[in-house]
Length: 211
Image (cartoon, rainbow, N blue to C red; front, side, top):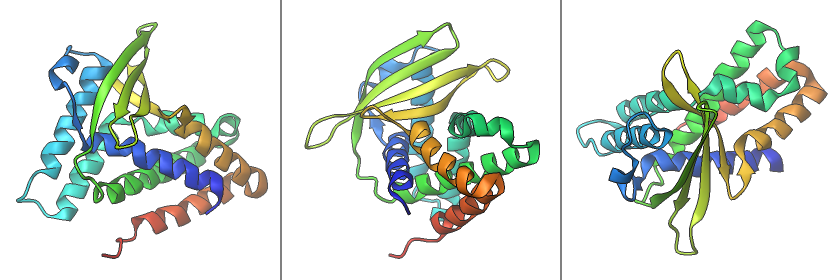
């Protein structure tokens, strides 16, 4: 795994830990229909799943991944990652890349959940632009100080729902990191080469971790 791909994975690992942690001041984030409130709602659902002692790991995995699907706009994320290469890809290639990218991030997310140790994060801000785009600012509490994590969301009017299309951790964007990796692969191996590489990554991240 090269450095840029590894960096992108680390960003997603930290970002996706957030839906598995307890938010500070939860009642502050309950304004109906706000990006902050919807993100908090997803967090509550994930916590309920993880706290369900009657469910086995596979059941929890399916439910958590389904919750990730409802809050992340993987098509928009993939489109932004591919940038100009999105226009070069045909419909079938776009569908394949989006599906594989979703599986890669979902697999990475679930594998990270095993490391959850009750970390907390607080909301530090919310900004809405043109009633369509929003940023929800959060900070993870760590012994070495808070780690700022910003969620970029857009409003899907057909679904009347705020969806995440990028995550920025300490000013490092998940989309930009993967964009550089994808660009290099497409440049050297083409769109179909990217699909092959993503299939390999999905296979690797989908393997059951050793205990």
